[in-house]
Amino acid sequence: MTIKHPIPKKKYTKKERPKNLSYLSNLGMTLEKDVEETNNYYLEIKRAVIHKKPTPVQIVNVSYPSRNKAKITEAYYRTPSTTDFNGIYQGFYIDFDCKETKSLTSIPLANIHDHQIKHLKAITSLGGIGFLIIYFKAYDEYYYLPFEQLYKYYKNSMKGGRKSIPYKHFQENAYLINFSLNPRLDYLSIIDKHIIPKMKRS
Amino acid sequence: MTIKHPIPKKKYTKKERPKNLSYLSNLGMTLEKDVEETNNYYLEIKRAVIHKKPTPVQIVNVSYPSRNKAKITEAYYRTPSTTDFNGIYQGFYIDFDCKETKSLTSIPLANIHDHQIKHLKAITSLGGIGFLIIYFKAYDEYYYLPFEQLYKYYKNSMKGGRKSIPYKHFQENAYLINFSLNPRLDYLSIIDKHIIPKMKRS
Image (cartoon, each protein chain N blue to C red):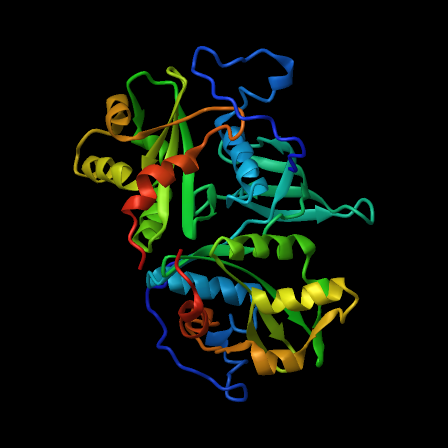
């Protein structure tokens, strides 16, 4: 987890971004890994403390083949009741999830679970910063979608409105996250520029 | 998780607290369970959103005996890099862990892992509220120990000083948490009274 020799920050445009160089072999990982790398970098430079929550697992059986290491031999995935990521930045409670879509035109709301909406609604109403990071694979673009924008589409869908958020909405209203080497996905700069100036301290 | 018929709040002194009544059979659970019940209550009344992080597990093998349910057949416990509990209250990022001791005289610092100290130091320096809930079984007393107090003892122990925090310190400087039916361990009231008034908003 420790970055001993930080790689100098360099920004790549979509076309420039090197994909096949071996020393960059960690690029092209999943969205979640990119976010975790970003968080490790933020932690290292003491900018923020944001962690991914472990996948919740119900452990049924454990064996002890050696004295050192317990081996879980039966367990099941449980449904999380929160989003995957949370932590602290600039004194604010931060909470978000990551989603990706191959679609050219929209992201279906079905990708976002009810418990995640409920959780993000609860934390934003208590003064937290809630959002999604949405990756449009087709365009290789990452967007910061504030919870308030998500919630408008969600509420509308509950009343029979459209069941997805159009790509056009992202282009016009969400915030494009810069992809670079370090940090990979600099979502805190979006928060600095667009979110904190609008926050009310209680 | 849903409390449909909240039990009226009643405070018990140490001697009065009923332990063997069947309708209270959930009392006398572990400290962690009491804290989780407390958090469920806070969530229900929309006072705070604070969750226990799942135990981190490295999953090695999964089988699919039926179409519905994946069965994890080989997994191992991993060392967490944070504390067990975090969330949001009054706009503040909250982060803590629970410890208990049978000792009459002190709690050994060995009970508190280095990664927990490091994590709590990072979050408090970013404006978060970090603390421990310490249960002295012998006295049936729960204390709120602010991270700053813990850190003084920790730093001193690193310089060769005592390796434990005396019970006397808790009586004189930490905050006794009230135990009742609902919420079980009302630690947010300690934060209201003793912590938030001293916090500086950035």
